[in-house]
Length: 293
Image 1 (cartoon, helix red, strand yellow):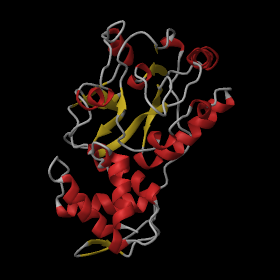
Image 2 (cartoon, one colour):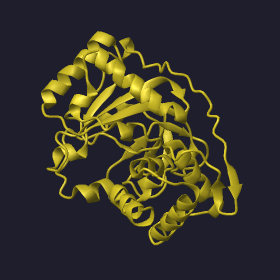
Image 3 (cartoon, rainbow, N blue to C red):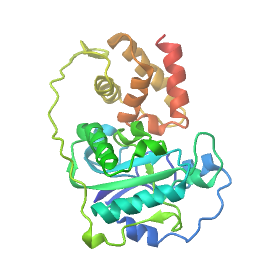
Image 4 (cartoon, rainbow, N blue to C red):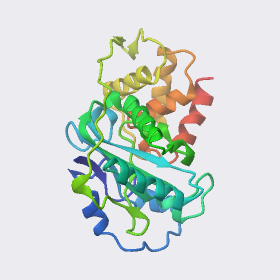
């Protein structure tokens, strides 16, 4: 399975594209990670991440550069009982022979507001899917889990993160509290049943970018943002982020009306821009309030 990796924090483009073997990766980890003193610094400059996707070319960290999706990841933010979660996970592997992996995220080892025993479930797919099918595939898998008796929503699953194309997902940091299939030769990978139907969405252009757009859906907002960035050759390195974000908002204000801030935040993630910011939710939401009100 092909994945795009970040080896040292979340900054800038991907570092490498390679085959991901979770079991081999886990075997390379220490039994217990050294204490994390500053979670923000660890996530931004030390932690290792992956996006289970094949890239079209190069290492650009943009949703438009993702050729297909090869796995689905769930972030579980509120796990009241880690032992209960483990038991549910064991049942899933034993009863349904599904290849999947469970590990604790760095936030589980540091006291943080809004998180408790933060955990991650990774489900590699039997066949890659089109990026635009990701949202349906996530919903389908959530339902399949629920039918097996494993309700991911009981553990604070962040479905918006799971449905965001190109979202970075942290790899495990230690062997303890990381569960891999012990019967891999008996397990099968999940096959998404939904089929991708090409969108009939069309747009026209003027000198500012996209015009004549449909409703400000996440898909349309993402198309606009990606096209605007490519057309104007905008970058998001430190020192140019704020000015270029403001330019995008100027284009958005001309192309759309009544933009939902939550949809816009999702679109910035889909376009691969939010991931480059230090505080994406805060930075984007603040600009939405100031520039789109």
